[in-house]
Length: 265
Length: 267
Image 1 (tube, rainbow over the protein chains, first blue to last red):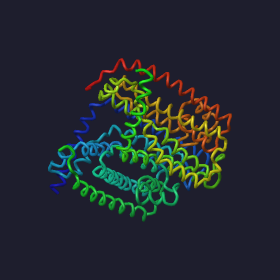
Image 2 (cartoon, rainbow over the protein chains, first blue to last red):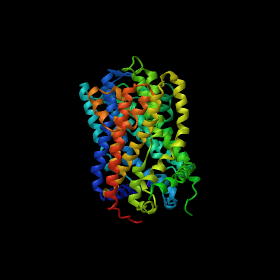
Image 3 (cartoon, helix red, strand yellow):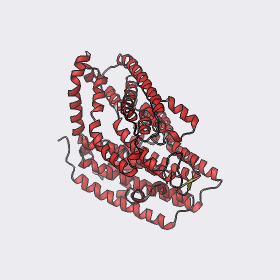
Image 4 (spheres, chains in turn purple, cyan):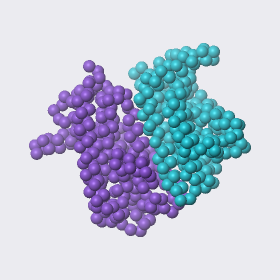
């Protein structure tokens, strides 16, 4: 209990210093927001083109697929604002050898590096995601299913923790491979597949995106929950899966950090 | 900076660039693996064409198209915009300016030196494409093959020069990575990378033909997957090289003016 309170205080200090740092670069807020809005809009072009040609795709209508895109946009915002900034900094620490200073501090290293930087002003996409949902459900002429929405909130937690665990696994690779600052890029480009309902992928690819890199759990499942058609068993398995991934990433992080040999000294 | 000394320096520069690529081969492999977009789009469009073909495209055509996209993307890559932006910000551009060689030449050779290694990676994909879709889809006309090779060079030149131009903007703004992001978003949509140009409505297709993006990627891909006849291919080739010329003049102009502002912070 005392430990939890201590970490909560530590968390608040970290967030505060991030916000203060961010306030120095206020102009970035506007530019970042505009650029990411532009990206989101252009990324909708394939969706429009596909549904211009077809009424439905792998059992998804345009509006339903738009709900998935909304979830993708929301998770992208979380990734950009809360996960990417900290963990990119870890890769830099490992390369320069400055991770020493983090390891010396009397707190859990994974906690410290994961909360080191937040950039909430990069999360303008949260608004875009909500707009996409409003448009999608407005066109369907209905509201999201109520129990489904509760499930969706739970799945948001699941998706965020999955995203975080996957990131920890990716960053752990930086302990083994020397120069790997473009890992972010690899991660983002794989994550891009989550933009689409997992049903469009067939065979091996769908299996990989459900069990190995569980993109389906992050965007398709929450969307299905909102539409009120996600079976309860899938929800239960998602929670179990996220727990397993969290545990695995923690083990990998601990064994990677045991291998860390400071680069500079 | 005579032409002769530049030409004499080229082989050495290329060797240096190639050695650098070999040294960072793991990083390069990650870059190649990160080119997953054609595969995602391949899955998407295959699903669309599952029940009935889209225009002239059936599933096989989409496989051929997007594997060709992967290959052409590998062979026409450039990243000078980020390089220039970084070197302007850190002041290390000063080192390049001291050499008796135009910095653009050294950037160009460095970027080109990545192509042999990227070819090794593209080769299996090319073989896979051939096995999956058959050689019948490749163009039979030798002229089209010649145009394809020229269009690859043209596509690379446009990519490189656009990168160089946007990178040069960093001399005014300190960093131009954001501008590059906007350019990339437009490139994704209009180059045929996500959607074959043929599948756009005719009105948008007319606009795309005037923009440079299709000439970077879509044009060589279409040549390879039998989308074009001789007349159309020659017309597009002309369009491509007009853009190469325009970009060359544009980059030359802004490079000269921008360089006068270079302050070599921290250099």
